[in-house]
Amino acid sequence: MHSKTSLRRLIEGNERFVSGAADPVDLVELRKANASGQSPWAAVVACSDSRVAPEIVFDTTIGDLFVVRTAGNVVDELVLASLRFGVHALGAHLIVVLGHYGCGAVQATCDGDTPESLACVCDEVRPSVEVARARAASEKVILCDEAVRRHAEAMADRVRSDAELGDAVPVLWGVYDVASGEVSFQEIDVLDTP
Image (tube, rainbow, N blue to C red; front, side, top):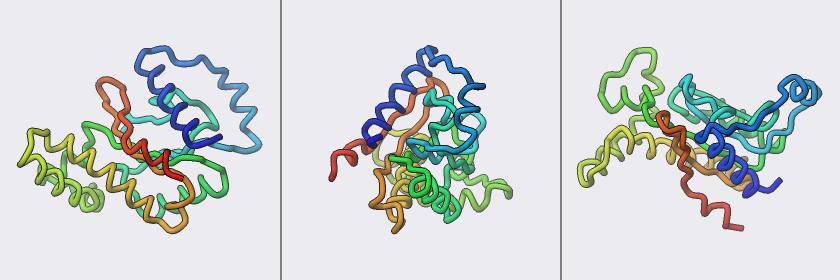
């Protein structure tokens, strides 16, 4: 499967999720069919937030997505190693870093009220908040929403800068709206580059 096809499947799946027209699936049959191995067609880095379940948000099922979740969708060396496995060993054709509005880690960082349990996550988010703060001062944007976007973009850039992933597959970023269910993809034009 080509990366453009993978993206189209994600977009169409999200449209079904938003409209409430999810594809019916036989989970028992799918479980049996995937018991001997997996071949996901896309990898998704998402937040651990319980409202952000990529398999549901993209109306996919067992065996479709290779998902790595961390608080604040932070990409660190463990996430990169997981993505390398998903791409090189399992064959994912696309990586999406998925931020979401209402992210607690981003909100805590914006507020400067970092809980001790999230300190290392907020340290990773802070540079994106500073970029967002500069933009919010000059334009009419909501600070935390802009910080969510800048952080997803920064984490996608981190994946792209990895020597084993940067040239292997396209890396996109997007933002999930927990209220509407919609995912807005960014940098789709990277799929048009050779």
